[in-house]
Length: 243
Ligand code: BTN
Image 1 (cartoon, rainbow, N blue to C red):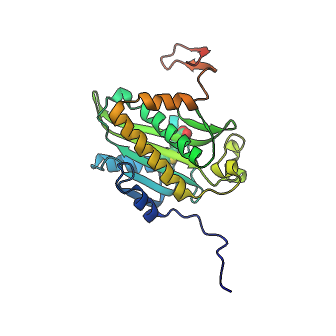
Image 2: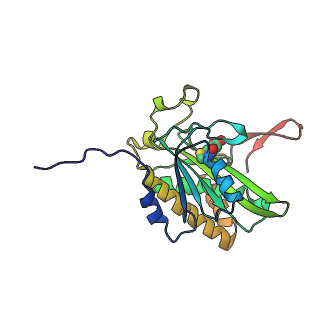
Image 3: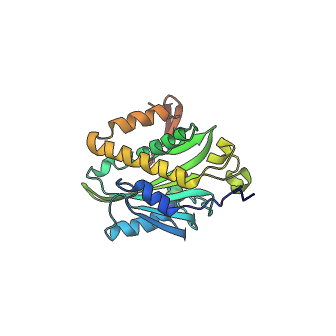
């Protein structure tokens, strides 16, 4: 009577991504690796050699995924989305950290498209049910008054089950698949995030960061909470309400 397809391997479909992102700035060019040390390292190298704005460096797995504060970020093949976007904006270096907030908003909006809700913990961890599933690492190359390039690295735990996480983060990490109760197609989710990034970045170029900050506030789980701030200048710490 014929055949039925009961499953398909979850591979990243480069041609689908390229087709979906044609005509956009973010994703106009995709550089794909099966395995790489860190997409942020590769993207920074590309940027120094003149890689154009909007270029996305994507890997199926990363051997040395990097997190903020020199932490290690676990990025096994086949389970997540590990990618970095090169941008060459014309705003001042002091505005660069806001790109991190932009990226967090883009991922949360893409999750909403997939029927999932999440909050953003200052500055850019994405949490659901108090557990983290997305990390963002933004790095900048600048002169004192001019941004040369910004690399936004985004890591999303897509099809992890609890046992797939290293033991030390198992209790505090989650994934799109755990939240949804079924696997999520990585190619479709990546396209959704890239389209959101493209639209938000275009809005920033037209109107500044106001609308992005407003969207960030809407999703923040930090504002209104008691927080402890640690001074990097050695002045100790103080607590207060995050406004
Ligand atoms: C964090 O939570 O501390 C940030 C994690 C950022 C991970 C992403 S994965 C893609 C890109 N390449 C890296 O080496 N890091 C970022």
